[in-house]
Length: 78
Image 1 (cartoon, helix red, strand yellow):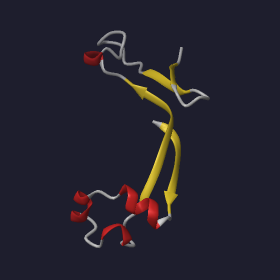
Image 2 (tube, helix red, strand yellow):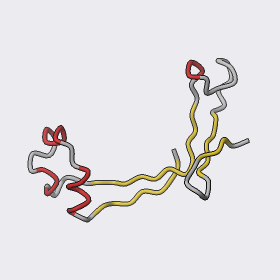
Image 3 (cartoon, rainbow, N blue to C red):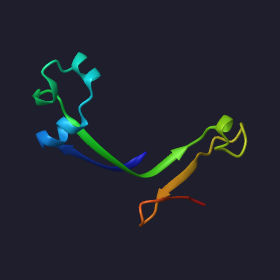
Image 4 (cartoon, rainbow, N blue to C red):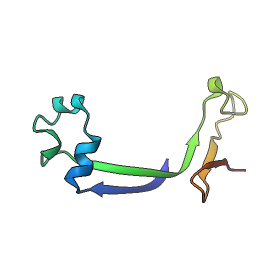
């Protein structure tokens, strides 16, 4: 995947993204100084899975490429 990432400083956003299983790694919760939230927005995805039908053949290793469109959707690259 290729895209943009941003570090989140907002405690409100960090709390909103918090999941209880994270407590095993950050016992102080989303207020922990060691808890970092990164929001990633992909613009390009390369993928290959012959078993899922995302490839031309099991011997071709060229991935399918999806590009984000201006409206936020995805299109297969030629």
